[in-house]
Length: 158
Image 1 (cartoon, rainbow, N blue to C red):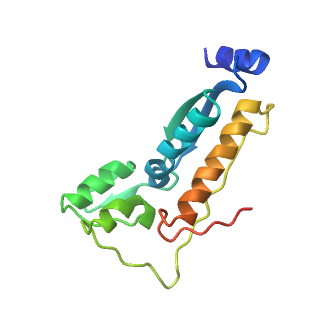
Image 2: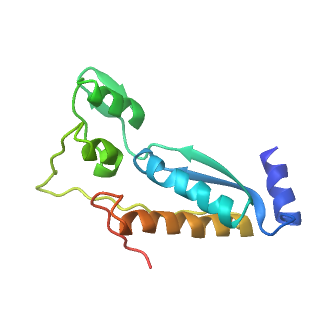
């Protein structure tokens, strides 16, 4: 069914401009920050695009005392419940840090950094609706960094 939706969108487009189904995979640490602004931007600019947001864990399992999980929401719940510590990027706890529900300490010697990149399929044509959603996704991420909503975030792109 997904392939039929893609084919229809690429052949016919939307009545009022660009249209089709776009699936965006976001990291758990960035999903809360980016998903709502992205959906709002797509709805306002290209209402023919249907969004599917999937959250995926990019790292390995984190060990919690006697509990292991690969879901950031579970990690946050356990930390907020007083069941241990975790190592996550500050953006994962931005709201909780601002409300002083948790405390954080920087990791150093060596300093840990990560680079988040955008990937598109190389084995098929990229539809106009996907290209448009990518432009809006990059804009939302850049805006989050520029307005300080992404703690310790630094924009490296154009």
